[in-house]
Image (cartoon, rainbow, N blue to C red):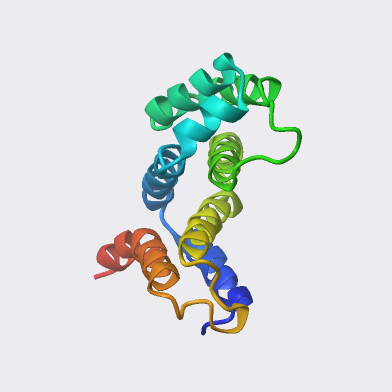
Length: 163
C-alpha cells in the first residue's frame, strides 16, 4: 500500500475501528499539534484580525477541554477576522480545518471527522516533505512516519484490549 488513495482509505478504516478513547486522544493531540505548528501563530497574526489571532491561540490552549460550542465560537471569530482574501497560509488553513473537524467530532461523534484529522496530519507531513509522489505516498520519511503514528494511535488501544 502506498498510493495516496490507499493511504487515505487506511486512515478512514483505522478511524472507523478505533475505540472511543483512541479517537478522543488522537483528535485532541492532532488538533493541538496543527494549531501550534510552526508558523501558525505568525500566520494568524499576519492574516487575521486581532480577535481572530487570539481565537487561534485560545483554541490551541483549550482544544482538549472546550465544548463544541466554544470551538464553534472560536471558528466564527477566526472566520470574521480573515484578512487573507482567499489566499491563506497553508499551515493556518490546516489548523482551522483541524479545529472544524474536532468541533464536528464533538458534535457528531463521527469517525469520519477523526479520519479528517488524520488526513490533515498526512497533508502537513506531505507539505514538509515538499510533496510526496501520489503513486508512492509513503516514500518520504515524513509521510511514512505520520502514517505510522496515525496507525499506532488509532489501532494501539484496540490491539492491547483484545489480548
